[in-house]
Image 1 (cartoon, helix red, strand yellow):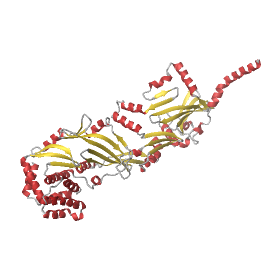
Image 2 (cartoon, rainbow, N blue to C red):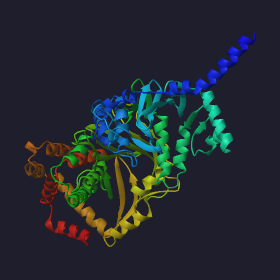
Image 3 (spheres, one colour):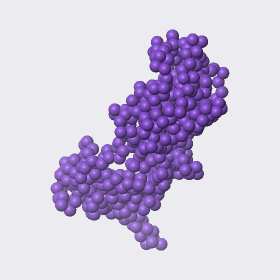
Image 4 (cartoon, one colour):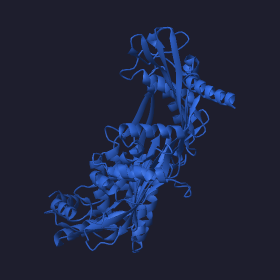
Length: 599
């Protein structure tokens, strides 16, 4: 019995003596060199260059717009990025390049610190390893005494990393020091010892974080996506913070950007298909022709042609209203966008590993409007890496008691819209509370404003004053504006003297249109036999002249069809059209009419 007790006591003494030795043996990692992923290290590359091949491969995925983009960071790429980044950090060794060819301290270590005389602590490297939903971060370090004894070890922290629907979570799964596993229970005791020794509440650190929750007991950090939105929304230093928060909320809600750690790779998924439209998405031909013109539009000549068109229209219908149809608006927009500097474009430049420049471009192809009594639609076509993306604003008309204003409620903003496939999913915004202040800075001017209900108001007192001031002394006054038959209509009132002159001029135009020689003269002036657009104008005009000859009323539909055809003519042909008409009118009446407006 005594012998057994002696053996037990002796064994315990030996165990106590040997425990530090055993621990040091378990923690020991002799060959740090083989643990480093040196095959991923490439000297002389910047962090951006290490990612260039992956970025290039990612952007090339835009060639299939119906599929989402996956950006993959392989384990090798991540370690290459870490290596390139560490060599540029101030205070670390810029010559760091561990490999079989490196045999001196000048390139072997990131950090070398003298602990005591002839005793040095060294940081050998930092690297990562990836598995499903886990990332392991390892640090290799050693202590060298008198250049004779070197003790090396590797500290490895393995994290569970997950991107869930409503949150991101990071949790320590395990810690190893060499071959020695450190349990969460043991780590918890260490933290308790630190807390007791320092008097600092280490286990309550999560209460001091500005965002997210750190649970020291389970060694996890949870960040709710709603907290990120709130953090952005409450950041007073951030410009347009409400808009940024709303856009971020859409990113989370639509899961536009998500990530997952998989075997040997960190994969990011970007739902690019939401933003790209179908391959066949294009501008309407009539709009496209405005941007394809070989020379810029002469806006003054164009607007002069609209005035002459107004005179002709009123002569046919007997109404004094000036119509600005979709074509007029789209021509003015195209003239502004497609000026001397050309259409707006944006580009992202990066370099490949050889330093060669690479560029991805986004261009504005065109902007156009669609007008109706019920809706006002603004559409813009973008070209992203040669793929179409259609943006559409939809506004609905709201009744107004003011005859000088047109009011619209903004309904939706869609990006990646498909006109041919209504079921295609896109990014649609229908809450404009945060977007309105941003739109105001770009849209509002003297004639376009947002009211207290965040409705878009076109016209109003400013437009009434401007037009009536412009027309002052001419005998014409604006009496109201409205939308009718895909056009914005300015209703005008003429004083009696001008009305009489206007009626005389309208009667003269009607006489010209029923003149048998006019059609022949117009065919010759426009070379209608070789001009499809001119031929269509004459066909539509014939419908009108036949009714005039038979004393039948000319309808608004007849005039609209003629005007649509007329707008397809070139500026020169439009001028030739009116010159031909004036050739059949008494020159004194033309002079009197023109002088009345010039005054």
